[in-house]
Length: 93
Image 1 (cartoon, rainbow, N blue to C red):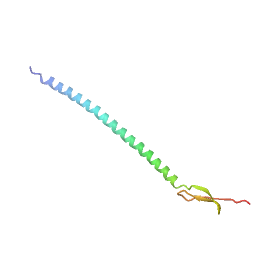
Image 2 (cartoon, one colour):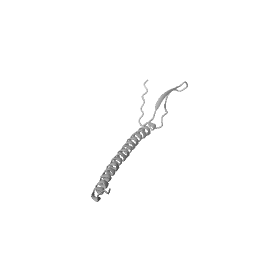
Image 3 (cartoon, rainbow, N blue to C red):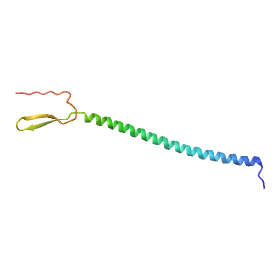
């Protein structure tokens, strides 16, 4: 038994719509995964940049400590990586 031409074209059109719908769902999933990966990359980059800036600032800070030397007495020593920007002292007596 032969199917009339107009019914065959309607069946083909129906299959085409199902195929288009499946491709659209697949494309949406692909786009959502890509967008998620992009957002995760941007967040990771921002956090890494912030941490890098913070560590750069802390590595340049001076760290001043008092040490006691028996012959000289108390001395102030910079054990940090940066120069002290402003230092004042006062000796009474």
